[in-house]
Image (tube, rainbow, N blue to C red; front, side, top):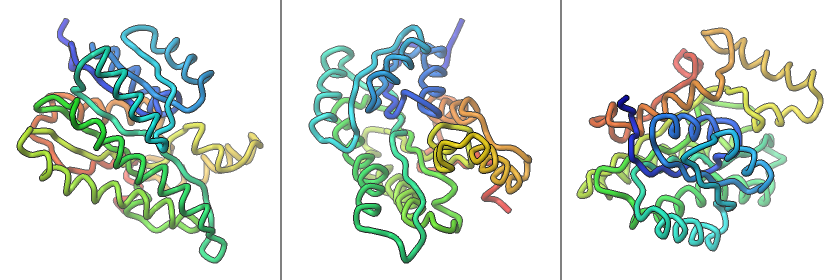
Length: 251
């Protein structure tokens, strides 16, 4: 049976939970050998077990240059190349204007901008001709969001990177695209509401009410969009931002 990523080597950063894990599972099912990263070893081990096959889990913090060097050295030794790079690691929390601190700003931009930039840059020597790079942004990069301005700005930067990088990498025919999810039922989202289950469900319900489809997404739905961008099905898709948001940012 033909699969979309047969014999491909892929890396998913932030692959231990949520969208990253769902995408790594999809990549493995489609024939790729998938390297996944995460900061927490226990979650990383559980993710590797859930994926089950064609997976190598490497503990790494994408904001740490030494960790990135170790990661790509390991991939070079084990696989020799990368055909698909999905830069998914990132995150942030809420802070209203007037309460924003330097620490909040630095932490958000380190995770979502600096780490993403240097993950891609350090991966370049391993990327094969015609490789696919997919970056995780967010609809918040295009919409206004109270108390989320720093996170929103960091995700807008991701979109700007893709526009320039397709020019930097054009001689090697490397495609760079962006996936921008709307609200997705992930640990990172529900944790914004704290540890209370009722508060978490209230957040999901409030977000669902703003989505034309009337619900939040599941991680697997975003993973399928990433798979499309990673595969030859998107062979002439380059520099685009694919919104997977149930219409939320479109109205």
